[in-house]
Length: 89
Image (tube, rainbow, N blue to C red; front, side):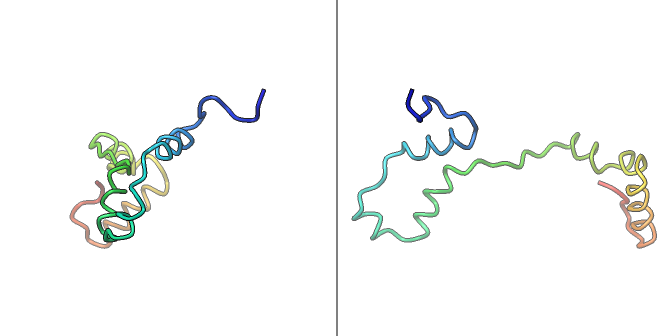
């Protein structure tokens, strides 16, 4: 048995192995290209982590969620005192 694993175990290891297996551009083009084009090439591989969901937002920051906890009630009280039209999300 060698010290090297056959397959990556974690998500980050899989991502690193996937990125490291990509072909690199020739050195001459990478030196002459602009930083913005290099950035746009890199952005292609960035995963969009924010997946908005109205249900999750309401469950976490909605009025009923605020009323269930002591700190949530403090938040509602602060917003009411400040004169906010909407007390919660």
